[in-house]
Length: 499
Ligand code: GLU
Image (cartoon, rainbow, N blue to C red):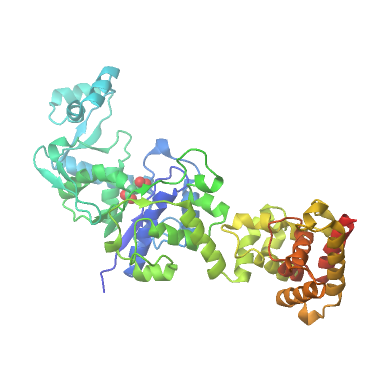
């Protein structure tokens, strides 16, 4: 048995979680669960300027919706609480000052740079480096002068000026970095808040995190993190930087709602199933055997393995996600489950009430049958209402031109006759035959009895009569779903339209 992993998702509350970002939570969760370990949620809220109201709720909702429940973290607590960094400031101060006392960090009385200095630093990395090291060796006199000027110091890390640092990563080729190229990183800001660099290391260590899975945007500063671990004398967790996502959602030209979704909440609003999205996110950078693509959460927990995270970039594709979602809708949900999941969307479209979302009462059977009409057709749940809204209207309210009822090379009069015959036939069809299969069989027989050239000459007008549109579910299924009375009403209205 592999050792139990302790992993964490450590988002900053800077807005709603992005799909690319939450992927690291998926990997972290699966690794923890695969090894029987724990998955933590830690909120990295030390950058007060970037804080966005409501982010914490959005993060928690997104994780819960995807089924990524955390074992320790906000709302739950745990042995290493608090799990909000803003409530852990004294810890960061403790380790920053400890490093100062050990001569591994120092107070830096940074003053605002002039425009010229800023430009010079931008142009030349050497200038930038020497700015960062300005207070590395300072005299007591200089320090006192700065204090007298009212400058509040930051604490900077004294990065070794010689040697090289290798970033140990199990996915990407470990970058090897010349220490002399690294600037003296700020660990603690003048307002007493730590930077990400110090805070995440302190927390990962104290929270006994075994594996850090995070975005590749952190790779450039990873060498500094290695040096900081060394300075603190702590063992480093296993580092994992999953591949970047190519063609990420929401970035190219003119986009549909589906193509421009980037936040987990948006996928939910569009009607992607959480289990399908979870499955899709895992495939962005991980594979089991190069051919299996469908995995339930349980299967993922069983099979997930860090060794199969790919070093090459993953390619986002909304078509693939839609395919997967449609597959889950059609093959993994029962008709009842599909209807249940569609309810919020039906309510949103005004087809049912909010009260009915909670309890459909006697309408349950009807709604299940109605949704069942399009279960094999829709890709996302938000498509459901538009596909079946006609089922909620009386026949008299369906708007369509009479000509739509008339098939190719047919006449209005002949079509009216066919519909009249269908009315007679369905009115008499025994109850036990009033099923989709029974109706289909009966109407086929009727078309033969009427000596029609093909069944379509009957099914076409019947289908249009049921829904008033050319693209629709199966005619017999609609008839069964309406029930005899409503179905006959629809056929009568159609007959009247034809005069
Ligand atoms: N707060 C960082 C972020 O949201 C966390 C990175 C990490 O996982 O260490 O990018």
